[in-house]
Image (tube, rainbow, N blue to C red; front, top):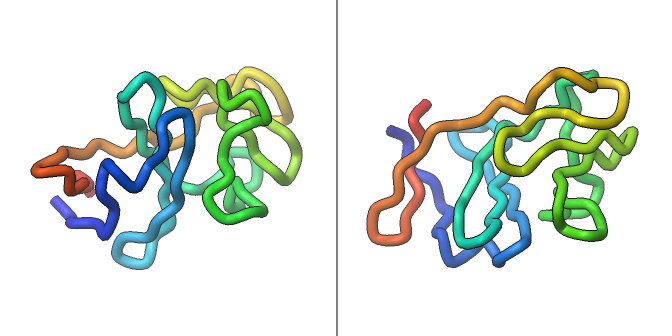
Length: 106
């Protein structure tokens, strides 16, 4: 397990938060008090998903969106449902939470 500087309280409900751990970029999304963590890399061309810090969701806050080409991903499983990477998935990261601290299983 790798400790992060991210606490569950740092992630707004229906919002997202980017962070780094061991030099790799990740992001977390909180929806209905559930947290989902993905590697910050679009499966289409491998670039970071956001242009604006911590902005990983579409305007309705119901889908993860790649700012580069508009691909949409399901929050709960990272599946791409629209855009050039349809049928692909974001890389989900397993994690544990202890006393609000997030530990990545990497």
